[in-house]
Each structure stands twice: as structure tokens, then as C-alpha cells.
Amino acid sequence: MSIPAEIWTKIKNGTRLSRDDGIRLFQTNDLIGLGELAHTVRSRLNGKRAYFVRNRHINYSNICVNGCAFCAYGKQPGEAGAFELTINEIVEKVTAPDAKAITEVHIVGGCHPSKPFSYYEEIVRAVKQARPSCIVKAFTAVEVEHFARLENISVTQALERLKEAGLDMMPGGGAEIFAPSVRSKICPKKLSGEGWLSVMETAHRMGIPTNATMLFGHIESIEDRVDHLIALRELQDKTNGFVCFIPLPFLSKKSPMSHIHGPTGVDILKTIAVSRLMLDNILHIKAYWVMLTVKLAQLALCFGADDFDGTVMEEKIGHMAGAESEDALTVEELQYVIQSAGFEPVERDSFFNPLRR
Image 1 (cartoon, one colour):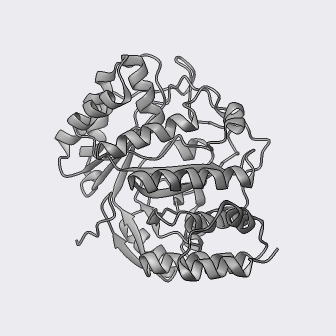
Image 2: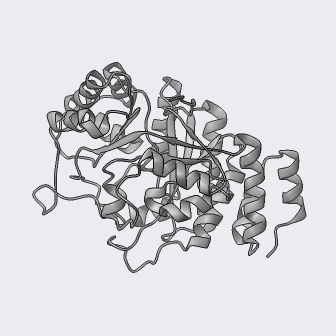
């Protein structure tokens, strides 16, 4: 199926695409044409710039009550491979010599069954005290709702306390796919899609910007993907709180759902391109090299993506799921792979403000 002429016209005129348009774009066999469309929008919004950030990932624990069917990261208490970090261990990671130049600390973990809310407040407070110039981007919507429920407080109260401790921004994880029929199979214990959107709306209205994600390539349909993108677009219309969208390919290799092969390279590029075209009000699309591999992430820059993430020191979740990418990239490596793809590397902060070194 080729791309309908009316979609080309809409993109040329800057007209918002409909649900049917999104479905037809996923159905097209014209991958090059789809890439050209997405690159047109990417160039209109971001020119030749491809952003990166000096960041460190900290996964404070993989002990989790949710038991998602796709997850290779979560463990039960006492299970082999389960871990949880102390506050001192977390501080050591952001004050180590190899973390000297970072500008962002990205903190996420499992929904621990018994950690008190004060532990999460202290993580943020301690990191902010140790590295006051760094942006603390911490805790998904799923985690925040879990903290609030265990503490018997509202999500608003939880976010107020985290913000007071030094929280600057939230990552976009836990969104998976919003479709209830899919969610009931892959993550039935996790916060619902409606709940995820509600937490994010609350954060945005409190002045806490966030990212957004979509996990694709498992048992969802293309209609489910388009509906997910439209739900994000509608919330962005209301709050303008999403900074960046990250399409996350399902990695099946070490997953309990390993019988599903996960998305092909073509499907990944198509999803990134359609995301760029549908999300006309979210300025940035990330090519998350950890889960794409560096080479496919380079190609994604030609299919609508404009962000390469960053140094990503010590990422665990994607690699425990079977990611075959490097454990980290240096700034020089990031600049090289971006330039060799034909783009201009631009170092940024967490909010996409360019940084000059």
C-alpha cells in the first residue's frame, strides 16, 4: 500500500493527521516514502540537529510487585538476582570520577513492596545535595502512584513532597500500551493506561515536565499503537508537559514472552516515523540507542528522530531484557555516530536547552 496523496498534502500544509491516517501509514509498504515524510517534519522542527545529554542511569532496585509478563528486570524479594541500593550507594554513583561531567541523573526502579516513601524522598534529596547542578529525572508514573498508595496519600501529595526534595522531571516509562485488552495480558497488576495519563497530567499541572513512552512489537495491534499516540497527543494539547517521546521496541530475548520475536528493524523505523508524524505537538522523538542498537538509532535519525539520548552510564533494564548495545557511550562516540549519520550533534540539558562546553 502506498502513502495516500492526501496524507502528503496534510504533512506539507502542517495539518493534523487523523486516526485513519495513522493506521494507513503503519500499513504502507513505502518505507522510504514514510521516512521522507517523517524527515520533512523532523527537519521543520529541528533542522539538522541531533541532541544528546551527559547522563547517568541509576536503577535503585529491581524488586517489584507487578510481575509484568514482558519484563526481564523485575524480581521477587529473595529471588536470585534481586537487589536494592542504599542511599550511600546511589550517592557514590553520582559522585564517582566517571560521573563528573553528567548534567542529568535518571532514576527508576521496580515497585518495591515495602520501602517507605521517605526512602524515595531521600534518594532525590541526597542526589540533589551531592550534585546540585544536575537535573534529577526520577520515578515513572507507575512508581509515583505505587508510592502514594503505600503511603496512603494522594498522587498530588506524593509529587509535592518529591518536588520539595528536588525532583525536576519525570521519565516516561510504564506507559507500555494503553489498550486495556492488551494491558490485561502483559501487565495486569500495573497502573492502568488511564491512571498513567492521570498521573502525568497531575505532574504537568504542578510544573513537573515529563517524557512519554510506548512499548511496541509484542501482542498489540497497529490500531492500539495509533490510539496510544493519539492519547498522548490529546494530553499534550491540554498540558504541553511532554518534553520527548520514546518509542521502545519490545526486546524478547530474555523476556518471559520470548516466544514473541519482537519488532523487526523495518517495524521499528516505521513506528518512529509514524510517531513523528502523529505527535505534531511533541517537539522531540528519541532514538533510544540502548534498545535500538547504535546503528539502527543512527538510521532512525533519518526517520523522524532528533534525539540520541546520551552517555547512559550503567543502564540495567534494557540490557537485562537482552539489549545487545554497548553499556555506555562517550561524548566523543556520540558525536561521531551523529556526525557520520549526516547530522549536527548538539549537547543538551534535560529540557533540550543547548549547552556550550
